[in-house]
Length: 172
Ligand SMILES: [Cu+2]
Image (cartoon, rainbow, N blue to C red; front, side, top):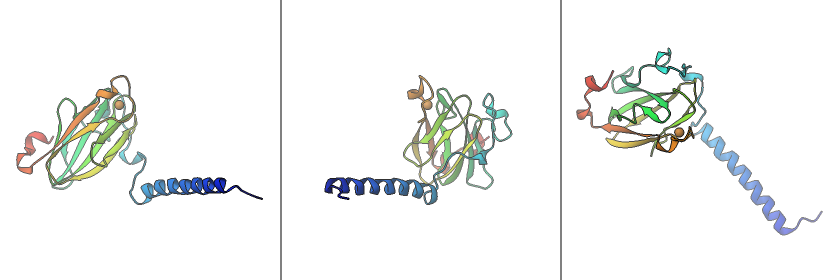
């Protein structure tokens, strides 16, 4: 059977792209550790996340070790609580686990400029752990379309110098 030269070139190119796409997805899942929100965080009651066993009142909490913090964030149309009305503040040189739950519909929680990025699926708590070395301000955005105010759903994460972090006032 004769296959035209151009057709052969396109066949090879298409095959190459399929292998490339499967390769990037496999790399992300196996090497880079990207994954779906799983059952690890436990379930939350969407009508009142704070009342759920696996959630707390939104805010910053001391973690299990010194230098570790747990930050509980509710995503709701169209704000992060905390994050939008008042910034989330954590000290530099810390390890922070974000526990994020939706109080209504599907939202996203992305810390701009980092690889912290998760969906917040109603009824399911999402967890992401990250280290912050340097004082810096980060933006927060929702990247799942959640309604007519979605484009306004943004917030701030402040990583402040350790000396400026008032642990007793800022940690619940
Ligand atoms: Cu949104």
